[in-house]
Length: 623
Image (tube, rainbow, N blue to C red; front, top):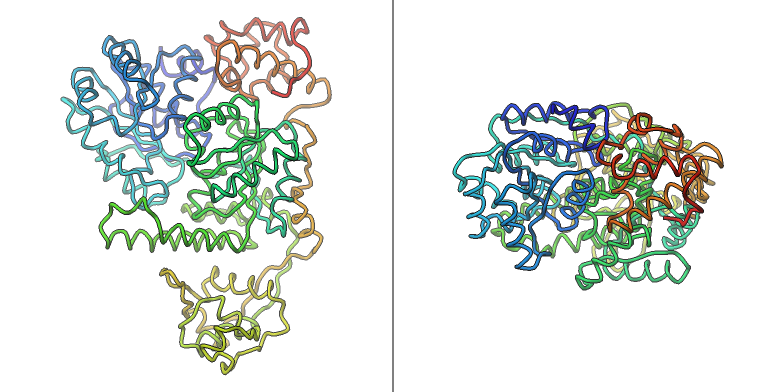
């Protein structure tokens, strides 16, 4: 079979997404490849299809157990023999899987990077025909990436110890140019085919809110989106416990996930989320990498993450099926302080030498600064993220809270001059908080200690509300009128642009929201788009479609229970919605539905056709 036939027969798709075919062809030609594609763009197909066309074994190096289990379950459901080798297996299970692998039972084997250089695995690898090594979440190999894992540095050593070098393919969803170059160098990719399809996910709505009561905002959102699957990320275990506990008390089906729980509870809670028995997951960033759950309709961040890479990766777990989904960040000033503390006490970098550790901390502070600017910009949020990754387009997407807010631009040159003059008069020795306290006329111990009441700009902006001053200060930093050092204290410095403002050469303008009612809506937790999804399913037309969708979900849940797999692995929500729209009545029509392949049709097709014809099914159980 050619790769188009494999795509249809095993995976049920009629055509490739952007970048997939180019990467597949590169692998089939024997070339190394690097694919940088956003979450949900179909990276796994790029190595799975060549693996099925090979006469050897493809090893997929993956960082998390949950990712491996999910991918292997999906492949087995599609009729592909696959296995994983990691610490979740008992010694007996591990050696049995290895012995089956030696007989050629599996075409694709997922393995944790820590296993690569163990003697038993090396013995297996040296005596087996390995045609490709695929590195998933490849950014983990770079110490400049947001998820550096020292175990990934063993990959190059493992490949060197093989009798013949296989094709190396690497894939990631988030990588700056620096990380991309690091991946090529550290994995020793030879003249690789590099495909960057772009980071844009048009189906995702991005929003930033600063509610006075974060829990009230989250509760309101979850209440307005019943029966929908979502993730709520918190910075600390304590917050996970608090938010999850309150949601459960308020009657929401929520579970928790963080590193302080036992392995068994994490597994049970993850399964409850994956199987939709508890569709709301409250978690630290310990949860999620590699989670292939297609029907996550929202990702809420209770706190600001430490960098754009982490935020986009976590937010990107919403809407993997291509249907509309929300990504909303609830910002609070304490979030910056907490993240700064994490950076200064980062135990993951302790094995690095002091000079490198200091440089990594400096880079982390710079990333945190840009993440903070995201929370304050009045420009298009999507454009801000894309620019961070090196993509440039129009500064309007029509699907973020800023683009849907009515702004007016105002001249703030007077306020900007006062702040810049204050920085100069202070000798560029203090942080932005101290500068703003000075121009606002604060009478604090620090102001008295540093004798800043004698600064020429002291109290010059006393009549400007404190919240507005903070926004102006953040705008001056984000727009380059001032800069801040990357050390622990973030001292404010003058720039060439500030000199132009001081000389009168340049005016400073800034966007402000016209309608104060917009902020009231955000503080109440409403979607800025005004779309309260009271149980409605995006893509369905009318009550008849929703009733059919409910019956199909019930049937899917029954099959998932029979086969002990998450429901979306049987068919995704998107595939069920397409069935509702097309209402197929026979095999050919069913096979025309995206996501329905020959193998899955043989297993489930007749049951779903009977359900669509009204001969099977019942009320929607909410699964």
